Length: 196
Ligand code: GRF
Image (cartoon, rainbow, N blue to C red; front, side, top):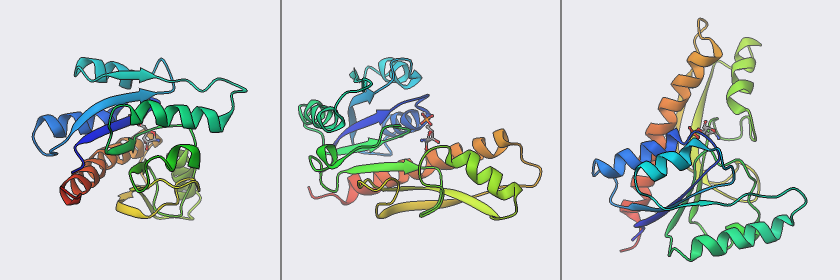
């Protein structure tokens, strides 16, 4: 049974907060046993502390060997007997040195639809594409993390409309609200369907 979750963040942690709130409300039968951030100023660390969730600040230092960092990070997380690793606004590409430690047990939230706007600044890029007339809507998805960035098998996705009257902030707000909803749904689905 996937009961023990580890959430990796790099920023505000509003998606982490959505998971914390859903677990507290009894919507997900699991617990977040560790929150990891590679950025010391990530407000998500504060959110974890406010909910008495253990945190780990694990920075990637310039010039550090990436494989070693990824392997060390995996070892830290394995030490908490984690069943599922959730990348929620985690801004560091993870190599097989990390992913192979958790086969089919690392999922990632990405604010774009499958195959669209992989990588960083996806929200801004989609907004610009809408202004250019090349897309009529965008979306977000939760997928299994694989070495190819934002390209793993999709667990759940949702479209997010962009309105002509939208400012970038309007679209971002709608995107984040949708992210919170699909991330909770994806984690709940995996927890409920995992082997006892
Ligand atoms: C989300 O849009 C996430 O998909 C992207 O960065 C944002 C993180 O938001 N990678 P938060 O830190 O969960 O508030």
